[in-house]
Amino acid sequence: MKIAVVGCGYVGLVTGACLANLGNDVICVDINDEKISNLRKGIIPFFEPGIRDLVEMNLAQKRLMFTTDSELAIKNSDVIFIAVGTPSDKDGKADLSAVFGAAEHIARYMDSYKVVIVKSTVPVGTGHNLREFIRQKQKKPVEFDVASNPEFLREGEAVNDFMIPDRVVVGIDNGKAKEVVLSIYKPIERTGKPILVTDVKSSELIKYASNAMLAARISFMNELSHLCEAVGADVKVIAKGIGLDSRIGPRFLQAGIGYGGSCFPKDVRALIHMLKESGCSSRLLESVDAVNETQKLSIIPKIRKLVPDMKGKKVTVWGLSFKPKTDDMRDAPSVVIINELQKLGAVVSAFDPVSERNARCILGNVHYADTPFGALEGSHCLVIVTEWDLFRELDKNRMKLLMAEPNIVDGRNIYEPGEMLSLGFNYVGVGRG
Image (tube, rainbow, N blue to C red; front, side):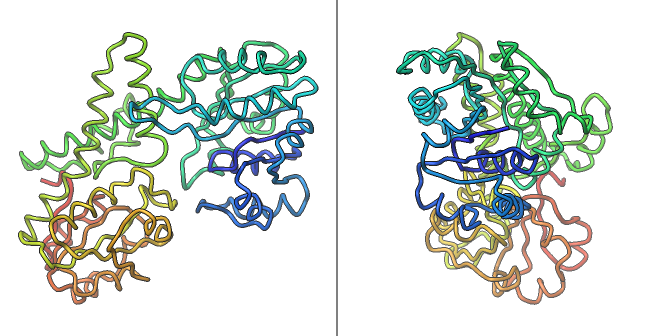
């Protein structure tokens, strides 16, 4: 099938490369000349395991191309995916200007029947509004349909999530479009993965509801961690105990220092805005968001307990991205924590295996080390912010010897308190009694 993908950001590039890998002819279009030039050379604008190989292979086999020419992409495709960003405005509402900008180009250049599939995360009712917008902007009437196909791509696992998804959700209000969209996902359906076909509005809401539910689980455990600390319980044991309940399950029950990234914060706030706009209560999700923001700062008193006066003291931060396997710094807890440490007079040294370039654009006066040990030398406290696997089994005796004081605040509970205390560290985790 001939497919155009509008937007070469995280979702658009992964979608385009994976669709090409399924045998489709895919044209990815973006307004950023430099990004397109780099993509033609196989230079990827973000870190994501597996995506470089997919892009290079499908470029070489000429199933994938990149362009800034919207007319070329639209006229030479049967299906057009809109995969542009929808960032939050100051009120939490999703900014749809890029979505409608893409729709305007589609209306201008469409010369035969197309199925327009909205991959971007958009508020309920956007599909309907987009359909009317394209009709109004068309120079001459051309038949088309609008479908919803929300993405569920986890950063660090995006390629696998596209090719082996938990489910594919498709919102369609027209039988002709249904046939076209389902044919795209036949290779995935053959693997036994369910395809859920709904109306467009339900499909749009499923995306927000999924992310809000996961965010709520995280905030629930983070709030519970404070009670664990107050009464001497262990939040990791609590998580295991409730996760063994088949009605609950074990995923997203790890206490820590809050969620970040491009999806959870934005989608929770957008859903809050939709609820309010529709005259519905948003108390639960407002609390989820508030707990998360508070949790990012909850680590500071733990650090101050071990290092009461941080003025001029070196504090090491391991991990900068909001989660492992990505270089994404959007809404990363590390930014809030480092800014607060600097206000208290600390000298911050940091290490992250892939995020330094993005971090330099956001954070000032931070020393970046080439290795975890390099960041640790002469430190008065180690703060673990992102749970990269490489941190788990490092030589702990070497860690202790390098440090000026053996203080560790483990914001992701990657170490066991008993082991760290027996090795002579002053160790504090999250919700570990």
